[in-house]
Amino acid sequence: MTDGYREQVSRNQLRFATIAQAYAGGQARRLDVELLAEMIRPLAFERALDVATGTAAAAAVAAKVGVRAKIVGIDSSVQMLQQARANDGVSGVQLVVGLVEELPFADDTFDLVMCTRALHHVRRPDIVVAEMARVVRPGGHVIIADNVTGLSGAAHARFEELQRLRDPGHACTLTERQLIDLLLDNSLDIVEGHRTTSFRPLDEWLDDGGAGPDEAAEIRRQLLALGQIDDNGTFGTSVATEAGEVTGLRQAMSWIKTQRTRI
Ligand SMILES: C[S@@+](CC[C@H](N)C(=O)[O-])C[C@H]1O[C@@H](n2cnc3c(N)ncnc32)[C@H](O)[C@@H]1O
Image (tube, rainbow, N blue to C red):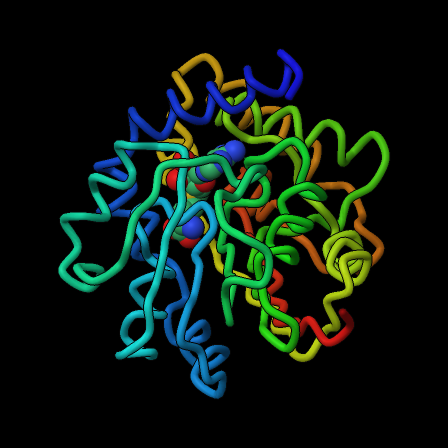
């Protein structure tokens, strides 16, 4: 791991240490648990892994659906895992401190491996997806749900900069196509996909990111310009405006279920 990479990991650790409690009471509750439950219910899983589990929002869904299953959650933030501990729904979940780029599990260990809302925090999502594919057994399932972008080129680069200004732990937003290609490159065949869009009021989004007043003012100003940019109809997060003001973001998420069918 290079020094630059370690810095990114440290930025995330620092940031999630600071916001762990607020995350547990806010963002964690915004996970679409019904959709995730629908996606995993038909799968007969005995061992499941939640990658970058945070406060264990997705692990709790797996624990509820797979009552007798052994669920493991891994995350680099001790503080996020401490918040997970406070969640009654995950009392039986094993929580492990570790990096998602170096999953401390043997090949073919899990029937189900999930990662929700976390891939955009890592600099090398390709390494994380490869690790997820390595630890799922042949025939097992990998589910990724993450924010996706419809922007490209300079507009994409500018939006990414704003995301990092708002939240220094932000690393990269993929397009849905890039996410699908990462999965296919790792012998994970797509078996189900969903798209969700949720409106995030601007103040709430800025507060969740922890942006200070100066950063917030700059982000507001630049978002207005980005709101005019055409994404050519590609599914992705967009800026919502009303009467020349930015009101929030329409946050786009892709939910992709795959199966490791090839060995
Ligand atoms: C936005 S939270 C998502 C948590 C959870 N999956 C959810 O849907 O609520 C992102 C999580 O990724 C974790 N994380 C970021 N980079 C990581 C890394 N390199 N290794 C392990 N965890 C990481 C953070 O600590 C944080 O808990």
